[in-house]
Image (tube, rainbow, N blue to C red; front, side):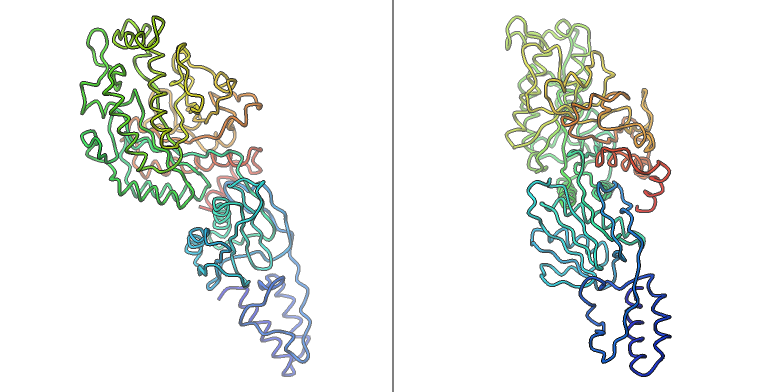
Length: 542
């Protein structure tokens, strides 16, 4: 029996003792001690089994109960605003209900009820002590990811203009009561600072199991991430079943049924799965089954991972895949890749790859370049994906400054990951043109297995103390006037040396960095907690 119900029973016994002649002073003395915890009906309806004092012919006045002013919830990411109040707060108890005011919130209601051991009662208009009520608000001015959570009178009300915000409110509640905790009295008004909060996983170079990926979906869902990036095609392998080109699929791969289960789980957590088939580079697994499409230089030497974009068959094959997987990943976003096309890493692409130079001149006249041809390739793939109503992003080194006759489509978002490549442009060069950007900063947010080249495993502390969404390249922030164009960021796992860590080691290694990253994406201000306090909180709330 929970503590507050034991005390309700004690109060009832006290009243009966008064009616049978027991000394009132004894009841009063015991009652003062009970002021440490109040029943849930202080400001609301009585519990169903509680005797009413009004029914007694000579009721005994209840002692005055006093509570300290509540503190803000201790959760990750921290809530943006909390109005303190005095009261007992709320904690889950057997028999308590989750009710909804709208059938559209049934999934959110059933999920949190199961997580907290409560009864899902569906749509109800009555009010009971202990209730958790989920509802949709009419506040059109608030964003879809915002929510209000009110803890008062032994009940919890979570509302938002959309089911996404209500879901985030249930994540806050879940963390607050984790391990027997209490949701503090008062009102939370919460919303994210950035609309893109992404976790990207390279499953092409390391075959993570479906179960492991599902565990990460649950983890990032509780942390209020809203995207899972899946990089499933690269030089090493192609990791998802294909019906249009089964010959390219690696032996160790996910079936479409497994992917559907992952996507459905992500959807239930309000996470969009963002697929990436990188091209025209990083296509080694495709080329292994179609060697005739591999790019070769003027000497006939094969170029690693690159398809010959002067061949229409290369475009046809990639478009087949883009069209096929649009049905596998029904979300509204897609990553085109576009990085590290090896034809553009040599000093003179036109001389090194005469077939590409000839195709460029045919398309754009005598001044056509390999950069023009490559930019046109990306635009054409963007058109293929746009036909499925997707928002599209590409790596920053796929936006070629040397392309003078062709410019990247205006709707392409910049996924800025590095400034280390030859001729790399500063983030401001993209932002100053009005283009939106997503921060993939490889110096803070890249977890690269085996730490090749100059990579080191990122720490949660460094992200928490040194990084903000404005720090796009290196350690220097861009001017704050570009803040609104930086849509958010991604923490990414890349598996360059796949055997350097096991799945369990990866999960452990990214645990604190994931939490630090989302804290800085949810709240733009300086964190209230020190790193030591934040780390302790992460251990507490899970």
